[in-house]
Amino acid sequence: TRLYDCFIPPKLSPPIRGSAPNKTGKGGCMSEGGHCYEDQYEAYRICLGPEARTLNRRRYETLLSHLENRGPLSTHVKIDTEGTEWAVLETLLDSPWDQEKIRTLE
Figure 1 (cartoon, one colour):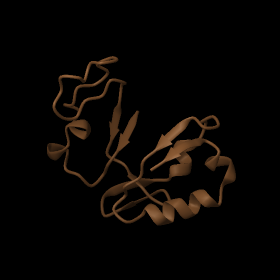
Figure 2 (tube, helix red, strand yellow):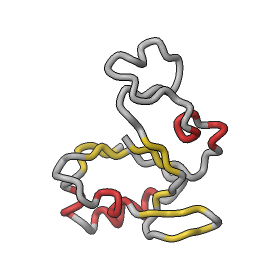
Figure 3 (cartoon, one colour):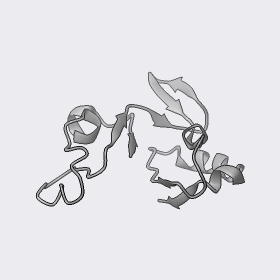
């Protein structure tokens, strides 16, 4: 599991800050009352955008770059990108090869 968020301040996000329980194993989050990950997660302060660039001191990368080297139906994608999701999705629509890598899109 990879989490990307460049907008939320780390002090407000236990996963981005790295303080959420991580890789607890199956059932390991049953008693947790908040953010908890049974599988290992990696957090990144990276934005998702239609092109790779730096804007207002925020680093943007493309969805297609993160789908690279992924197999068919191997990736679950959830996008909430503070307004850039439409441009990101338009780029994805231009690449049937990358669309085939996505099992679910939320």
